Length: 403
Length: 214
Image 1 (cartoon, rainbow over the protein chains, first blue to last red):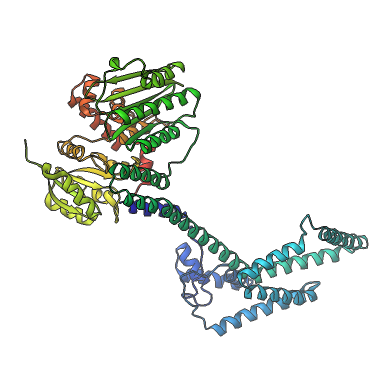
Image 2: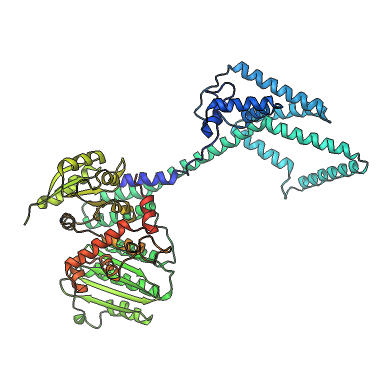
């Protein structure tokens, strides 16, 4: 049983929120890139309708073609999709034609277009290097690019370099603006913007893939970390205790104590009784655990409500501890009940056992236990204590403390 | 003394079933054991036991699957949930699905035999922890005007009974403490169980929804 609970909790720990439905291409079902079939599946209409819409839009000024191309680039293929039904060489040919068309259009139609082809080649080269790089290479490259663009604050030379670079850029800008032909600048900026958009479209898929790959790696790492943590915990505590139990098999009392302590610890791990220190419930649980450990009995703890610790509540907790110890020592039982309830104006704590009981009047005055550490302590803080006991029918200590 | 209560044990650990069977000895008549919900459903349908001792956590849907499959189709069969979990909220889903009580697996064999007899007689069984959970769940007045105020609040007397249960009192001791008959204590307890099952209180519905058992 215990194993099952553990498995249940591990599932809770590692599972994430259900993924939202995402739009995917279905290259294994479509005619070209699987865009139409992907959209059809996503919104739940027939493929033919989507295809007809694309064709109509394509006829109306080429918008359909542009849209289809954009979707092809931006929308990822479904993870479970097979290969495209298009032969690979046709795919490459289509891509090459599209790329050449885009380059030609930008290169000739835009001002400053002559810069475009070299820039593009440089970017493609960079992308190629990035794709070939291993993970550690990528980390190194990223660090390199960061440090070479913005120098760290402690590096004096680097700071100087940044300042000089910024000065040059600003100076150049001022120089240009001073003898400016504003329409030319506007056209130039426009061309730059178009180039940037084009670059983003061309290299976007690679970047996106890289980013998602890194994310997947990270979550996998977190998951295996969690698994290792749990394994480590089981090893340190559970296996250790089991070994101790085997060695102490001759002493039932010791075995019970070990098993009970381990059970408590495991429950804390599995059911997440969060250690909310400074709260009454937590303090009472700790006290009960200490008594369990010290006297090899089990304390049934039932708590209703919670409150931050104050001095009177601390006194009530110590008194409860004393009552538990008394029950453990004198009542000759294996189980003691501890019940505490937080009410708006007071707290009540009950410690009850079904043990041998005693006659309160017969207890000698010099015995500190009940009178000194329980009754007097509580009364000092404005609470009151009732002890009910009869020889043979157990004892109950009731502690009431105003908040 | 009437004939021994006919019991089916449902737990996915054969060791545990054997232990319970041995502990209960001649006090009840174990007519069958089951290690999976499917097996349990079949045994209950053919055997019509008076009480089913039902483990909360099992593969294939746990005790909840058994309760939902049987429903009220066999009225003479009553269910008593048995769990290792300290967390009473774990069994709220089972109680809301019709279980007549909840005990933890650390219960002594005398108490377990007693609980089985009590459930067979139509009474309900609250462990101290479940009573504490009830007090917690019904602690403050419902926020929204509740759909069914009758089920969303405990009467002062019911609260009193739950508090004594949580303190570790037996029904007999509660009756003596409150100067009422044991029968009246039982009536209060079964009223509280009905409230647990029918209340629209947020805490309870949420627990029941969250704990769709694995």
